[in-house]
Amino acid sequence: MTTAVCELSGGYDSALSTLLALRKYDSVFGVFTNYGQVYAEQERASAEYLAEWFTRYPSWRGLTRLKCTLSQALPDQSDSPYIPVRNLVLGTLSANFAQAHGANVVVVGSKTTEYRPDDPYCWYDCTTEFYEGMGALVSLAAEAGHEIRYEQSLILDGQPLTKAQVLEALIDEGIALIKLWNCYEAGERPCQKCFHCLDMRKTLEGMGQLTRFEGWW
Image 1: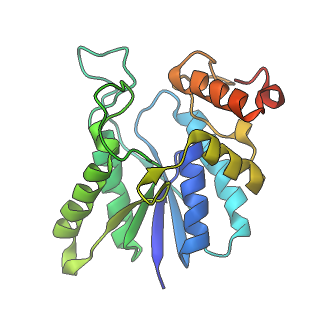
Image 2: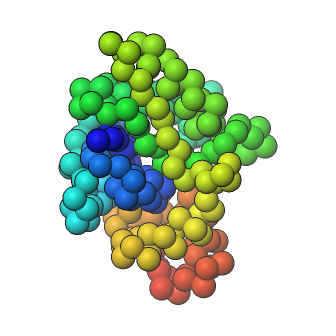
Image 3: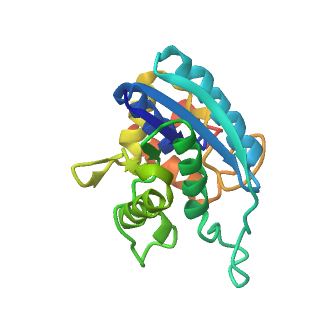
């Protein structure tokens, strides 16, 4: 029996990567981590919505909430959404949970194949190279040769799924997009101004779905 741990942030990518894991693995645990992000409550609510949705899959083993505190920005980048080595810390927490539950796979929502210096929202700790290195590191640190592999399930044959493909898959599943959270701000609804909100609006417009969500993004 193969057991996987999914990092479930409550966003679109983590929702689909967990959904794919539920169809692939025998036993799937979800972990949500509050690391001090300003939108923690919004993400938590989204993760809990998904956790309830996933109960229809017999492989689902429920959602565990973890907590730690991370600095929100580098001193000279107070306006940046970048959080230093966030995925290194989250990946280590997931590895700890995975080993405790006999899992050898940690599923992440990142679909970044390589670092792109021309993209201000692309960071080293989201890349395939990073997750391969994380797998080697935690496998070295784990007791009794417990190997852990990090899986970017939204990269197929070396190509990441587009945002439209992710959204289409979630809509087909019947998951309510307005119950999920990818906005960089905290509030009752998305800010409609940050990178994620603007990208979401552009993608929905390209899909011919914008009027369905008008007033939300």
